[in-house]
Image 1 (cartoon, rainbow, N blue to C red):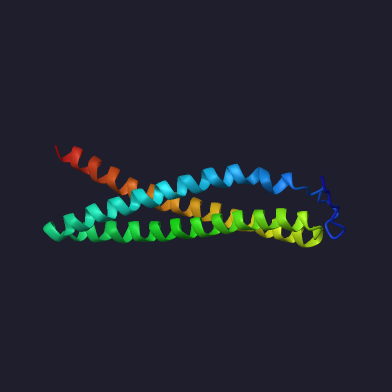
Image 2: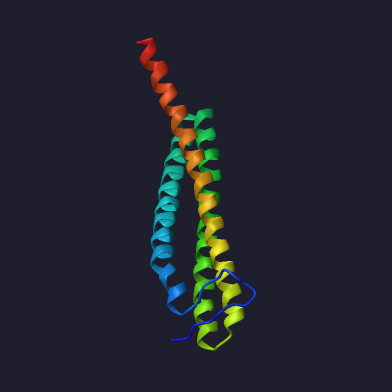
Length: 146
C-alpha cells in the first residue's frame, strides 16, 4: 500500500488508496437521496402543472416557481456530488501511478466539491421549510375562521 506525506501541508496525515475510497459509500448514499428529491420534485411539478392548466390559480404558479428553484438547487447538489466522486476516483488513480502531490490536491478539490454540495443541500432544506411553514400558516388561519 502506498502512503504519501504531503510536505506542503504540515498538518495533513498520510493519504492512501483507502482514504478517498471511504467517501464512495457516503457520496453514493447522498447521491441516492438527491436523486429521490429530484424525482419527487419533478412529480410534484407535473401535478401542479396539470392542476394549473385546469384551475389557473396564481398560488399554483408560486408553488411551481418555488419548486423550480429547489429543483435547480438539487441539480447543482447532484453535479457537485458527482464531480466530488470523480475527483475521489482520480485521486485513487493518481496515487496508483505515484503522483502523490497531485493526488492530494485532487482529493482536496473533491472534498471542497462535496462541501459545496452539502451547502446547497442546506439552502434547499431552508427553502423547503419556508414553503411548508406557509402551508401550515394557511391551515392555522383556516382553523381560526372555523
